Length: 492
Image 1: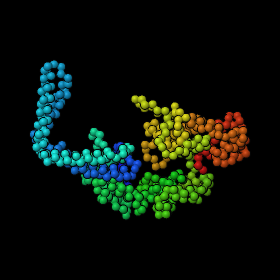
Image 2: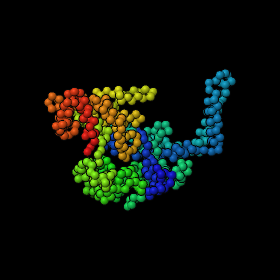
Image 3: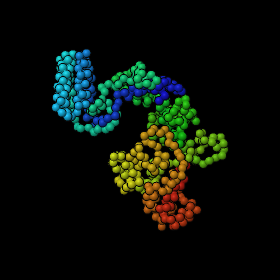
Image 4: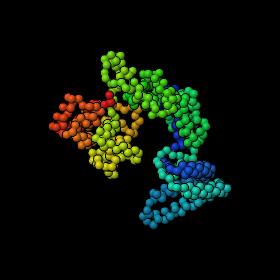
């Protein structure tokens, strides 16, 4: 947010660009937005809403004329009415006959002043204005009648520019004006901003003049700007993030900062080639980009250490070996469910509350009291209901990021608490029991368990040691040991 108060100190982003980008979203609020499944109904509702907004644009200036009509006499009456209201509030319930008489006198004076004020406003506004207001309100009523004939839509809480008025929360007929603020001071607005984006991206217009006052057109213009084939920043950023996902570090290690203070690309030619290939040959297909990377020679490398490589590039920025990466918290949980044969692969649907919830004066989110028999408890981690104020302790220990914060790259820590969580957490214990029930100790169960957990056959030494351990401590404890091996926790 440096550019909110001044031109950016390091990157070519002037202050005006910040406010031009803000102007793109100036007409958007968060509210219940009608959503129609039927495209024909959606188109009809959009048409009627456009008609309604057009009428409201004609009506609003007339209503403002009535609301803001004033004169010296009206101002004096406003003061008298306000004083009477304050005195009435101060009196409260009358305690005697004198206060009762005073209250009646104040109420009568306020009623008379309000009536006189209305007659003065009517004289200023004129009957023609009131007649025009009446006709426009009839048009709105007719449009509302046609909208009422449509099937009732579902309401989705989302970005919306039109929604039912609720008190002072009402949709603006036009996107509000955004001004460049002098040093970011809201009390010092300067020139009005124009919807636009970064002016430093060459070959693309930095101002969306064609968008006009339609907030939807403004956002569509920004979407076209972002996805334009000449916007090299977009294509380079996307391929860098996908590369980071597979290798643990991006070609540019600062995924959120491609500016002067960000990291320099370790393989600049590769980044340019990938961006052009992704744009031109893959047509922006992320599936093709993933396939290209995971079938590359760089991805197929082992993570084994080599002294000669470490001497030249200790941080492995040049990728002379594969980076060893620990499974993300969600992937580790899903892997345990999969190995135990309990992973629910159902797609879509609402999130699952994997905690005990009590709606008290202060809501209670208790993960320890969660019933694992709850329907959906074994669904993939992507379907977990996330409580931003009370994260899941098990996932939190494994560096699952705060869902309320944008995370360009997850932190990876190694602590004793993590080891204890993966060893003793009730979820891990339950999955170990389910895993043990899946394999048969009397018929090669140990070999089967190793095959499922580690994806390979057990060596003769491992086979003997694991069988002895299972015989002494039980198959469930052996399965828990397998969950805690580096082979299970890390991608080599």
